[in-house]
Structures are given as structure tokens and as C-alpha cells.
Length: 454
Ligand code: PHE
Image (tube, rainbow, N blue to C red; front, side, top):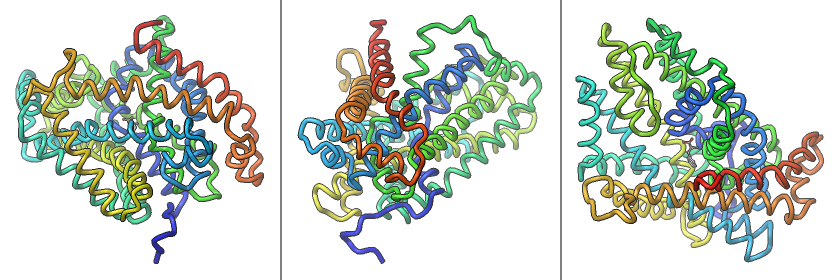
């Protein structure tokens, strides 16, 4: 039995990897990466992306690991503990706030996935190509249905997170992540066996150097950052539950490999099926909620049962990917509330989940049910996406890198990296070099690129 003042932690190494990979593997792996790869040079893009993960993603992940594990505390307090300064502490607060703000609208989309599981189950996802568009439009702008699913997915998250790290997050990740992977492989194999599938495989993987330009490179950098859940407190919070024996650099590499593998497999699931029925794939919500239901129905039209099962498996997979990310987002604020307000985990989870649900309700309303929630021509949903994703995220990532590279106590950074000298830390100097120079510069580039300044 754990005493109240004893801090929770992950029980196993596998739990650490699967939970953190669960945070990283999310909707971005399915709706953004494959399309970017297909559009931007196939295999060449994949190589460039891996390079971005190596140069930016992994070092930034290690930064957060170091800060989180050093303090064994929530993200806001972790920045304060390592820096012992109020200024740097603000990055921690900003990180928690970013994670919290994202929770609401990430939950809205996660709820949509759940609605589509239901729609697949009861056989609603059948019709002419135009049907899927109107189905999605009428569902997402409905005042009640998306809210219903939002509440359900938040309830599921609550039931997992309230049970704590080992019995909640770790146990769920150990179940969800392998299931997700198996579903992904089954659908990818089925998709690659369709007639004409090779054109899709070629679209995704065929190296095409002529597509590569600075734009592609910068988008890949941005994607590597987002895909690894950097700068939202998730990685830092999870790291605060790591053991002293966890090899931080190795874990970051393993998690990045899993995340990238899922993204590539998602491409092998989407493009062969889309090309086999001659539908042009796209990205974002319209890919998963409009294009793909149509593609799957058409591609497996001759075998209705297979079509039914594939559609169900696909939305099940998306829900799992979204849910494991949502758990990590909720955990950021839960750890914060629990430790800063000195309340029980159950109460903290309840506060976080209910307030994020309220934000989610407004985000959802802003998508059609209630047009008054638009500012500067953007819906509340888009504003949250913009402010958190395009402003807070790079700012937190940049300052964290600068802090670890230039200001953090060198001994703490080295001790955490090498587990107090018990690991060889072969790459420590390379890591430091990346964090000092390459990461901040890359993030400035991403930032300027997002605003169309370069
Ligand atoms: N990494 C997730 C994805 O690829 C997005 C995410 C970011 C989720 C941060 C949680 C926290 O979709």
C-alpha cells in the first residue's frame, strides 16, 4: 500500500515506454504525417523527418525528462526546482497551461472518433461519397451529439487517470498500445492487399528529391515537435514518475522509433486503400472523418463484412490513439492540481476533467452549433489550436532548450543523463551541442515559418 506522501511512479520499464509513446502517438500520426510524407517526397521526406526527430525531437524530449525526473514533481514545480528561479518557473506554468488548454479541444476530436466507432457499429457509415461529407458536417455542428461523446471520452479518461499512475495510466497503456499496434498492422496489411494498392505504396514511399525545399524541411521540424508531445507538460510530467534507473536517452530513442513507426504504418493503411479506389487522400479531420470512411466502404465493398470490420477497427484504433494522448494531457494538470492545491488525486482529476470538458463544450459549439463563438474570423476551436500549437508550444520548447543548454546546473543535467555516472553517456556532448545551438535555432525557424515570415 502506498502512503499518501509517497509519490507514485511507473512500475516497469515497459510501462514507461508504452505510456510515453501513448502520449506521442495520437491523431497527428494518422492525419498529418502520412499526407505530408506522400506530398513531400515520400521516402526522402521520411528520412528528413527522422533527421528532425534526431536533431530536435529527441533532445527536446530528453530536456523534459531531465527536468521532470530531477524534481519528481508536477511540471510547474519541476521547472522551479531545477532553476530555483521565478523567471524560469514561468515556463513550467506556461507548459501546464498549454497542456490544459489543448485538453479541451483534443477531447472534442477524440469524442468524434468515439462517435464514429458507434456509427460503424450500427452501420451508419454507408452511402454515396457525398453522404460522408454531409454526415460529418451535420454531426460536428450538432449542439448535442458531439457534446455527448465529449463527455463520454472525458469520463473514460477520468476513470483511468483517477486510478493513478500504475493502476490507471500504466495499466491502460499496456493494454491500449499493443491493441492499437495490432489493429494498425491488420488494416495496413488488408489495405496493401487491395488491387492497385501498389500505387499508394509508391506515393508514400517513392523517393522524390525534387520535392524537397526549405518549406518541407520546416514542416517536418514542426511535425516532429508536435508528434512527440513536446512542450505541453506531458513528457515532463510522465518523467516525474520514472525510476532513477531509467536510461533517459535510450527511452527517448525508443519512444521516437515507436512514434515514427506508427506514423509510417498509418500511411500504409491509408494510401494503398485510397489509391485502390481512386480517391485523393487529404489531411486533417476531413481525412479521417470524410475521406477514409468512404475509401474503406468502397475498397472493401465486395466483402461488406470486411468493410464493416475494418471501419470499426479503424475508429477503434483512432480512439485508442486519442485516448492515450488525452490521458497524458489530463495528467499534466491533475498532477499540478493535486500537488499545488494539496488535494486527492480523485478530486484533482475531477476538477481537471470537468473544466476541460467545459472548454471542450465551447470549442465544439464554436464549430457550427453557435456561430457567436468566433473571433477574428476564427472559431474558438481554431483559436485554441492556433494559440497553443503555434505560439505557446514553440515558446515553451525554445525557452526549455535555452535553459537546459545555457543556464541549468551542468552537473544536474549530466547526472540525469548518465544516471549519476552509472551510464557511459557516450552521446552527452552531442546532446548538449544540439540543445545549446541546433534546437533553439530550429525552433525559431519553425516559429517564423508558421507565420509565413520565412
Ligand atoms: N503527439 C500527439 C499527436 O501526434 C499530439 C499531442 C500533443 C497529444 C501533446 C498530447 C499532447 O497527435
